[in-house]
Amino acid sequence: MKKVLFLALAAGTLTFTSCDSKREDNMEAQGTEIKNEGEAKADAMEEKAETMRDSANAAGEAMGDKADAMDPNSTNSTTTTTTTETPK
Image (cartoon, rainbow, N blue to C red):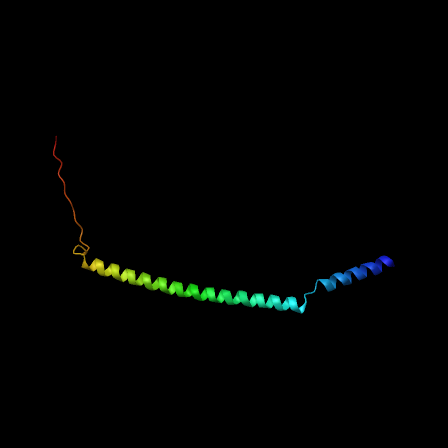
């Protein structure tokens, strides 16, 4: 009988000590909120960086296209070089 009472008391004690307190729950909620805010800020920064990268790439491509148009050899014509071999 003492063993059964001891086991019941031990099980009850373990059950109560494993429960979170309201203070602990509040701290976990605050930590989760801070983490979520940080993730949202990071996502916004990544989106802005991607937009800036796309804009810079487009500007660079446009500048390259303009430079190609200014090249007098940009008419897509091919040049063929003919060589003749002379015996020695």
